[in-house]
Structures are given as structure tokens and as C-alpha cells.
Length: 74
Image 1 (cartoon, rainbow, N blue to C red):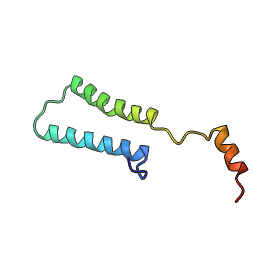
Image 2: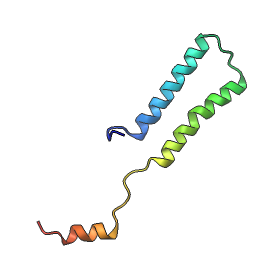
Image 3: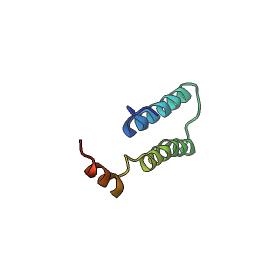
Image 4: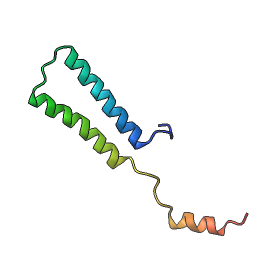
């Protein structure tokens, strides 16, 4: 995955894609019921929540990494 992508960009793109599919479905005549609305809500929220939970920043440096950078003389 390219490093220029951020969590916000991925989640925003996800919502845009789902909104485009929903709009295309509405224009094509798909009936929108309460169950369909709940399904769309789950389809929008769950993947975004998973991305927020799983996609974390870089892990903190270990003690060995910190000591190695201190011992290095440039």
C-alpha cells in the first residue's frame, strides 16, 4: 500500500464509493426500505471501524533500537 494513503483518505473513499452505488441503485429503481437502509449503514460503518482499529501508526521503538542509536557515533 502506498505510504501517501492515510486512514482518513481510505475511509473517505469507502464512503464515496458506497454513496455512488446507493445513488446508482436509487436511480435504477431499487426500493429503499428500512432493512435496506440498515444494511447500508452496517456496510458503511463496519469496514471503516475495522480500518480505524487495525491501521495503526508505527510501533514505538524498542529498548534495543534506542540503545543502538545512542551507541552510534557519527
